[in-house]
Image 1: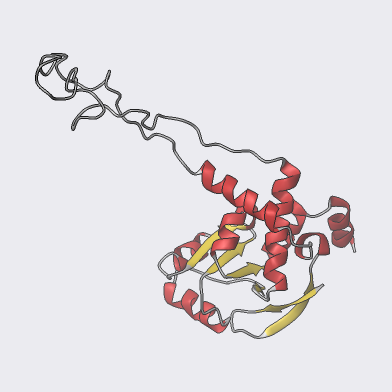
Image 2: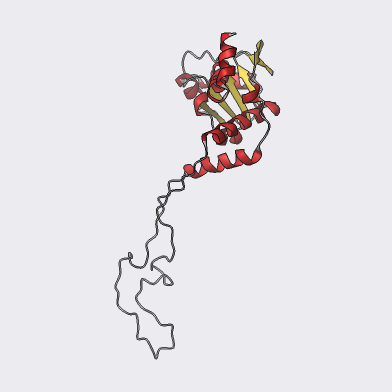
Amino acid sequence: MEITVYNTAGKEVQKLDLLDDVFGVEANPVLVHQALLMHQANKRLGTVRAKTRGEVVGSTRKLFRQKGTGRARRGDAKAPVLRGGGVAFGPRPRSYNQRMPKKMRRLAIRCALSAKVADGQLIVIDKFNLAEPKTKEMAKIIQTLNVNSSALVATGEADINVTKSSRNINGIKTTPAALLNVADLLSHRMLVMTVDAVHKAEQLWGKKQVVEAAQNA
């Protein structure tokens, strides 16, 4: 599968062959949804906590006598049914961590990348060539590439100039290719990748023998 590679001026510079086992995988929405839920669950801290009636500070004195008042039978003021009392069955610290087999996680990322290609939402650029952080220059590049919506910008390695130039642009997020995940791919409409990022993705999630053959060719 071939895709056009553009430069920062928006001009076509070359054609790039994409590996079908990374960018041409059959859609599996159930697996992608499972990977998204895992990512969201693993971000939860699970530190919320409510006090039970045994942990609330207060007197243990019985509020009024058991019989003869015509009211409900009350114990102390820390009962869960009273204002300021403890919480019955309240949240406690816990771990929301979920796990998926490595093969399933990798397949989910390949499915998400393939969906971007199938929907025409992948743009490949040769490189950014930012000598220093310049938000105005980065915004101009994004506009030249006809990105009019949210976009995820992936580079081969962490690029501090690209990151600093993009962080004040609404809807734009940058990430190294090695940190691509299903949640970011689904939450951004467009995916902008450098040629190095494409090669990195193929190296990480493609079949090793295919990648080595392509590199030796």
